[in-house]
Image (cartoon, rainbow, N blue to C red):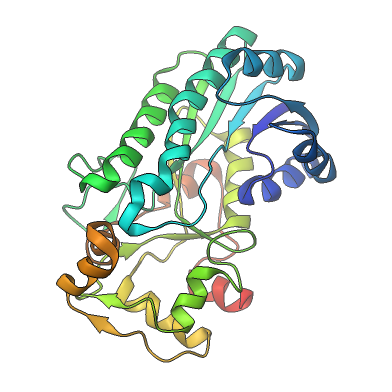
Length: 311
């Protein structure tokens, strides 16, 4: 198939494009600059240049690539400051709203058959009920204020993609990435904070996180492109874990002392309301549907194995 990947030079795109090429697909990469185009060429894709926020440029790029499938992996997430969470996600929120609308419109005009989009299954589920959620469970309808715009942008993306009659829309709710190019790669700021005991367990640490190795996420994306049907898939590993479990274990992998424990009010002062939510209220996600319908299995079934191997 002819596949256009928007976001081909990001952490996931760098894993995804070579896998698509190896699977025999003709891959095009929508990039913003000549330098990014050279990087995409090195991955095996043919570059087409467009700014995702410029509808005319996007339409021209899609006409040039003439794909059967568009894969939307556009994000602009750098350092995440939990005290200024809204600011940290502002550029990505815009890509998830305007970028999604532009790509969908261009795909519809060009007769694209399938549209696969990156969503978030790590921070977005409702913070009520059981600890592990399926695709049928709702997103958070009453997030803390600093998370509202991020969850609103995710909601917009998902509704736009799933409501589209043509192309067929598939949403992939990825867990928290680790591995090459992510915020949890060796030497990253996040892991260094854990090593230096600057990443404490807040309260009981009963917020549940779902992780996914970025290579496993790419494999699942290939499966969704080839075998998926309209709907939502959680792309996470087999081992959703409370912060109180995973954080001390990761510290041990790094050869660090156990993380400190602080009460919720101290966590709120240091990391803001979002930091407290991430530590104490998150819900994890189940990958049963993706396994069943996509025939996918993560090569790293648990973050315990995957992170230990990476570190």
